[in-house]
Amino acid sequence: MKIGVAGTVESNDCLITVEESDVLEIKIESIVFAFFGEQIEKVIRDTLKELGIKAMKVTCNDKGALDCTIKSRLVTAINRMEVI
Image (cartoon, rainbow, N blue to C red):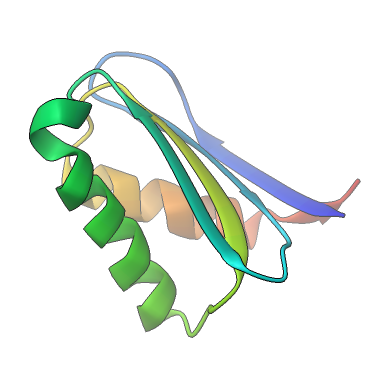
């Protein structure tokens, strides 16, 4: 199984974990989920679409990250995918 990780659980950052999958699965934990949960998911979906990825498991542990941070962490995690 290939897994990639990027980010931290520090304030204003997010920890993104990506894994190989046959389907698209997005799990979001956020201190601001009630306010920005839909936007966080949109950033993840849009980024995956830009990269041409249709199936992947994405876990996002958000601590108030900006959209650009979420996107960069996701791209980095994908680039770091390693076989475990």
